[in-house]
Image (cartoon, rainbow, N blue to C red; front, top):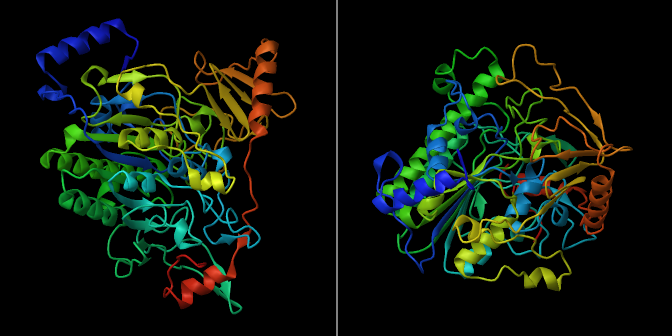
Length: 522
């Protein structure tokens, strides 16, 4: 990838624009001015930094992501894009436009409830926050959700339909079985323990009739194809696709595993096979956009929800970054991301952008493209945190290549300018090799622990992206400044009591929905 600041790259881009030559010889076309673009947000689950081709300096046959790589090459790689260290907070951040510390920092189950708090006493996004799909719908978009939700289920207001999506087809929990769609959660009703309750929802009710019929991501692919095939081209589309892949359980049709039989480690083999399946889904999406003449007026944003899980059963690899999912090392929060589609100007395609972007920023960016105000009056009336997201369209459009985001609060910790401070004990404080996991991996994953609690850890992540040199002792003035900035953010943390698993959720799943999870409060 070329640097966004490279003079040579800029000259090449201008020449390419002048002659009209593009990727693979296709003519590059600038998007039409004054039109509302179609927007597709793709949030991959548990995607490791080293588990995509464009992050491999030397190609390896085990990484089979040609469609992701092509999309990135045709767009703008977002090299400093940040998510939370695990699932639900990242998804809540994206959908609400808040930084995780202002919306959700825990991975509670969707059956959680605190009856004393009718606004925030639930899993996921507080009831009175406005979701991005509601903003897009108000701007004339048709809105669709496909895949994982993990941002709330307790009431109809918490579901994708309640958050502004015209349609939804997906699941509420952190994960489910790829073939039975059962969520790995037990519940008790009338002194009886229930398990294997199905977690698959379509619009306003259980998605019955699919159980065990096909691989779940195949079901999602067919829904995506249906949406894109039948969408009116002249109507703006907002499509949020949150695939189950590559989250556990590690499951995929055998034919995909067989093509990677040369990988000795089983977890690594299945994990890469899952991403190969997802890569084909991405190919189907982009092909349809071209066939329906939607490509030139489409913005596609692709990101992971956190770094790859390097613990046992995860299968991912964040080489050469330190650590992985569940930690605030770069391997846990600096994620694969890029923006593509015809809306990316020709001069930026194929380049790499190194300004900071957080998942919360897409809320403001999409609002800007749709022509609506990001301000959330409903949340303001309920005295909830305001939208944190910053508009990144000036960056993506090439108008201003300086990111408006200069700080990213972690939980706990902070990125500010070129530096990052960690203020707690941080697990998985090691590094992997290019091929991981392997046969010598410890049973629990990377065992090292860094104690940054009493004596905070400081890194310059721009010159030391692998976080190998702790600067806390050598840079006391910078450390003090970072500590002060961190404390300022800590003072703003929103952390309501979300309660405990509600027996009513279990009762509703059994009695009302016929063994399906769904909303259990009015």
